[in-house]
Image (cartoon, rainbow, N blue to C red):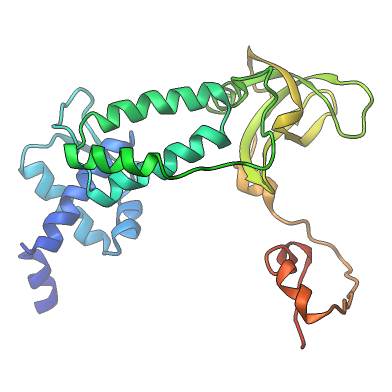
Amino acid sequence: MAAIDDEIHDDSPKKFDRVVAILTQLQSKRVIKAQELADRFGVSLRTIYRDIKTLENSGVPISGEAGVGYSIVEGYKLPPVMFTREEAVSFVAAEKLMEHFTDRSLGNAFQSAMFKVKSVLRWTDKDRIDELNANIHVSPKKNLFNKEVPNALEILMNGIVNKKQVYIRYQSFDASQPSERNIEPIGLYHDKEYWYLVAYCHLRKEHRNFRSDRIIKITGLDISFTLQHKELSAYLQKPQFDTYEVVKIMMDNAYVKYVQHSRQQYGFISEKK
């Protein structure tokens, strides 16, 4: 009981930092669950309930519904968020990656957002970012998108969020001519240096994977999904088989380091020197 009383009257800097961080989290999403906040900060649900009460008592208009979560009342204006020096520096890496690993349309949108973020930084942090920006370079090995479709990611993301079909002209690896398809985009993932799309294909009548650089034309459609789809993770699970075949591979020790990262994808079990 003493421990609970101590937590109730905890006015430590640690609690203050957590309450401020919770306020930031509430600003970043429409609705956030208490369990999400508890997991994020490594505290109990009771602690989160008290922190939310602290914010409410300070005048922040928070609405909450059991089983749904908390949200800040729409229209409530908060002062600009200040970034730490480490957070400001991290923007450089994010900007470089977005510049090279997304298509032109999404990259331009991110650049516009970054101008707004940088506008609230301290002068010293702005100088630090400029210095780092000139000394960090990212060079992807592959062409991740067809240059003729600079807004592919934007259209696909809109389709995923709005549950609207997308038309694509797609060049399969083993086909001599591209095919035209209406798809229901479910999710995007990056793997082995390429962006992939998981979608239901109306041409093949099944869920398929599409590689972004093979999309040569794309258009968003005002046609709603015809099916209910699972979350992306359900389609990325490794298939399970009834029988397995064990394979033993012998190689010179000098070459083992080259298969350290990829072997888990092929059912690696054990290693013996």
